[in-house]
Amino acid sequence: MHISEGVLSAPVLIIGGVLAAVGTIISLHRREQDDIMPTALLSSAFFAASLVHVPLGPGSVHLVLNGLLGLVLGWACFPAILIGLFLQAVFFQFGGLTVLGVNTMTMAAPALCCHYLTRHWLEQPSTRPIAAFTAGALSILLSSLLTALALSLSDEGFAATAKMLIATNLPVMLIEGCITMFTIGFITKVQPEILQLKAVS
Image 1 (cartoon, rainbow, N blue to C red):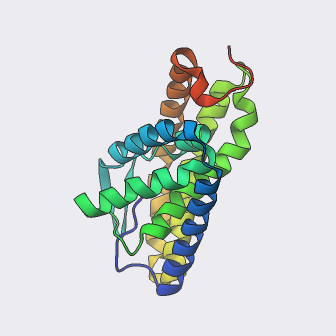
Image 2: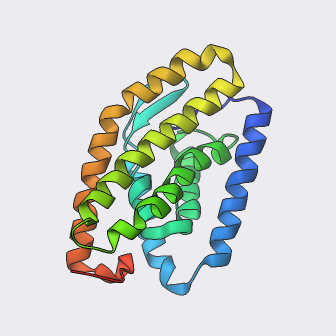
């Protein structure tokens, strides 16, 4: 879901950069010492998962795992995703530095939304799988919509590509939902303190 360089208009780039910077600053102000290790680990997972991608016009389709990052990290998903995208842009030319802010926003904002929407379901063992699947799937849907919006606001000619981007990410939603559900289940069993749950089975 990386947007390539040279595609977006200047206003979209500026707004995306400012919002990504604000989210990252808020995250750093809220950061605690215990957040560093989970943030580093999940940033690495995000970096690796996003490397395998299928180009689609000015964007691409691939695993993101932003729902997982949102559930576990909360606001810390902003620097985790920002660092992953920066390294991908520098080493592999995925996305780019000028679109770093927009790409961060399209992936981190949905992750944070899913954190607040599903986090309370995560506290109870009976609803934990539903919370994890919903976060994984919904984050991809929201990221697709934000990416499509960024493309459409930049050029009306990208409207068809934006619609195709949403359609092609529907299977990814299911895959991400399942991966997030199984990953949260595994973390709950082996190291539940990472999730900071109030009620752990």
